[in-house]
View (cartoon, helix red, strand yellow):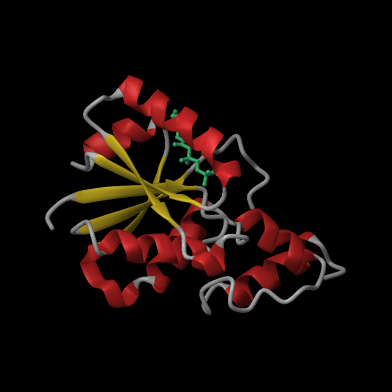
Length: 167
Ligand code: PNS
């Protein structure tokens, strides 16, 4: 159980689908680094990388050192190697995720063959959850309780008011 896995993503914000993948990963790996992509060129994000990392830390406070939240920039495989991780974890929902995940996995394998990508199938109650959709729903005044960790819901509602004052 000493294997370190990196679970990368945008996490804008973390959803209960992501939480599900981290919890499944903890059954297999000793430590999971939830790595938030810090991409200054992508300004459509609702939360800064630091805000996203803070929400993830709060969400997994009870897990102690087994779950680490961090921000990264540059190539994922370089970040993983720097952290001593030779496993990348990604979550899969529906078939629609496959093409994108397949491309990324093959590119990462080309860049660093010693890093393996492992897919976790998300719990069925999270098949339809995505950060993009919860942002859309909350912008339109819909109820997102149960789709996100409890600590994240009020922040998303506050942020929706800022981005879409009609919400
Ligand atoms: O949650 P997302 O947006 O699907 O996550 C995408 C992510 C962060 C995993 C991907 O964009 C990524 O790894 N970016 C880092 C840059 C990189 O390594 N690119 C080449 C590999 S495809």
